Image (cartoon, rainbow, N blue to C red; front, side, top):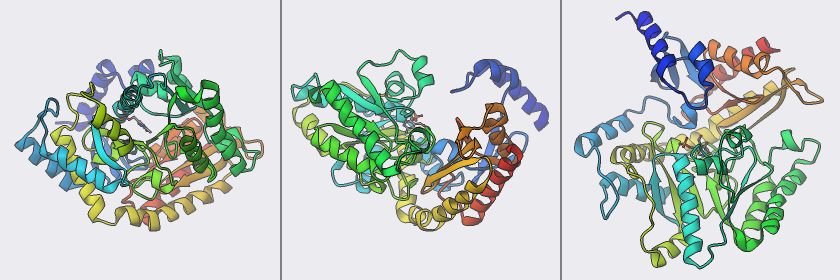
Length: 449
Ligand code: PLP
């Protein structure tokens, strides 16, 4: 078949019939986009044959790249053996059981149970169901308010979008009225004239202020990512997390760590909570748990919660047809096997990430770069028109969007969030591949300046 002709037809069909997530429908119907047709190692290829180094690991999920045959084999074998059965009503299946145990093994001791979902959004919905049941069973139903952060992303269902703090999403959502948002620990955006640690303490203490405002006996939980990913790889000052942890401990507030992006090696350890010394009561995961090859999410539930739910709960009236889907959990099991039996997380943390962060830091000298921030294997490069006043590069179409498009055309997949270029390359990159990534980004910056 003529590939180009076929591609033109696909483009037309896509523009005519397919509504894409987080996309301006009209713009897409008029201009279309890129159709990806294959991938190998850390490279993705569109249907025109254009090769790109995937600087975003898909959507922060293919941490081990695209050629992990053992995951493909595990899914294939599982599909042949038992393609589906549910986990409702006293039923279970082997890969779901084994993945639950494997997740318990790689998380801290207080996590002995997992609830599976298909996605991070559903996992955060599940958090809300778990938290409200936990307090209900203790005769404290009024403890229902949840505190989150501005500019957070926790998913796209009504509950997850309400937990998130992105104004564009709130404008389009009738959100839940018991969710409240405090400031994000985004020093460059919110408090660049303050000492970073003083700023970190100040924004952490907004949690305490919000608890006082709502009444401690009414507040159930605080939810946050260890490092806010989609919001712009927002690296909290060192002072931030210890203060948040102190407040949650002293004020009897559950702490939910959303590890959907940070989990499975992105920050340098298995989980961002370890990197930042956080002790969450609930932990959301998704994405890289299957290396992105199958849809799967879930919540790690600590003993503090299960002690109540298991011993006093009766039926927990919550679940999804595909909770613990055999093929998805088989993919998770194969992914965890690779992570546990290889030194990929340690190698990325010790060898690749320092090189990645150091090479990107060099870009801070560039005339349109205001800040380079990162941790482990993700980073953001913030674009400005004036380095002193930190004025953003405007208009967008000549600034960050242009920079991203130029990088894409040069062969680098990066993401653009506001005025930041965002990168989360696969953990399996070597330093030469990181050099190629930084060189393409640098050329895109030159073209934009
Ligand atoms: N939480 C975080 C931190 C995320 O980054 C995302 C997705 O990007 C989600 C939750 C939602 O996950 P999903 O898209 O699988 O529903």
